[in-house]
Length: 246
Ligand code: IPE
Ligand code: IPE
Ligand code: MG
Image (cartoon, rainbow, N blue to C red; front, side):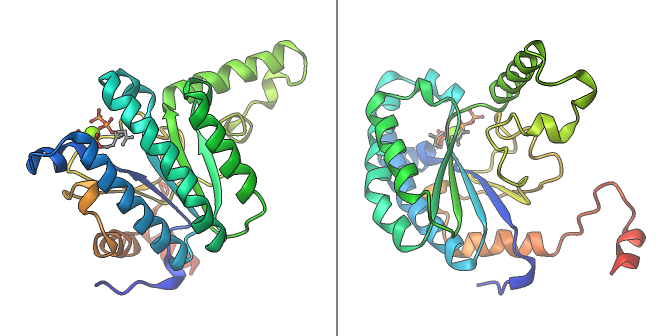
């Protein structure tokens, strides 16, 4: 296991949890079995990140485009989600985790929405890691929604065009209260963003690994963070400029 520098942990880790279906297929199992095993990985990674002292963990659990999957898979995923949220509340309370959701919640079935509201309310006063689930989430949809709300505020006279800057625009996104991710991990070997946090990932370090999400574990997590800790984040500047500062 890699040793990590506790002073250089990502403040915000985002994960595209991919490969549940392939994990199952390789074992001649139904896709939903892969999703069930994926939930176990979620439990493990949430616990590890919370123990490490990571401030924000954001997990891409269901995209806007995932609604296009077969009805049977979508409803199985919704059921799994409902059960996961309900069963996780005691653990979130124990670990002082604050639960958060981003995405178009109006699309979710009412029973899932009820569980979400419950988990949000019960964990609202917790002061540890903020665990955000991206559900029915699409980044382009999020940006368009922000633009629409901003336009509405402008028409209503609450803001003027000269007030619109990056900070103001970002305040209309679902992630208004969350810093941009420092590190993004995507599992299963796919090297794409799949409509996840397009605005927020502008200067995020990207890490892709080949293991499917159900096989992702503590060792892979540490490897990803270790890799991140060796990187130089230049934000457009030169390496020399960064050295001089310290
Ligand atoms: C990720 O695993 C979970 C969700 C998108 C809900 P997939 O279901 O995408 O697994 P693959 O990519 O088909 O292997
Ligand atoms: C991205 O995975 C969405 C989630 C992990 C929830 P997908 O499996 O849906 O992405 P694509 O379709 O391969 O790009
Ligand atoms: Mg996939």
